[in-house]
Length: 203
Ligand SMILES: [Fe+2]
Image (cartoon, rainbow, N blue to C red):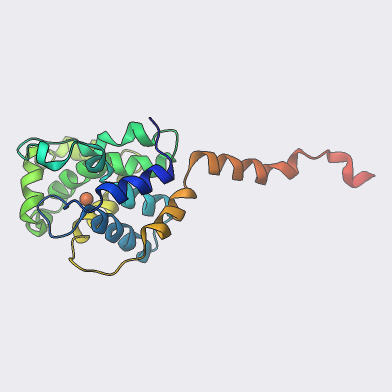
């Protein structure tokens, strides 16, 4: 089932108060802080939207009480079928790649691992640990991998209890601008004048 922007608003409303894993912020606080960090850094609407939605898989999965925390929940893939066809690839791909981006950063920047929270180090082990050299090279050559790395860095910082952020409504309007349908409409509007008869100016 494809999710609309309104469906996503309801999902955050219903499950956004759940805690973000072992961190001291809720799922909604984490999503808003991540989107805010991207926006403050001057990221485009697609990457800001990806930041807002990067952990949507957690909200679509079974409630945490029913989940084991000693297995990888592959949440980066879980939300993709619900978002494909609704949002642009520039939104979907950084979401899909954001866990691999952590594995890449640990391989590319040895100091990065030290900076991770205990919870994030725990999940890294479940997610396969740092990339080997060949895996790291293959990862970073993919389209949207560099955006996934940016998302990952903001993800790591979006865990500050009580931090003030713009509202969910603010980011839902950013999300609306990244819908496939919206962009198709915009493209047809822009290309419409070129479809006019070339002879008009000769009349
Ligand atoms: Fe996250």
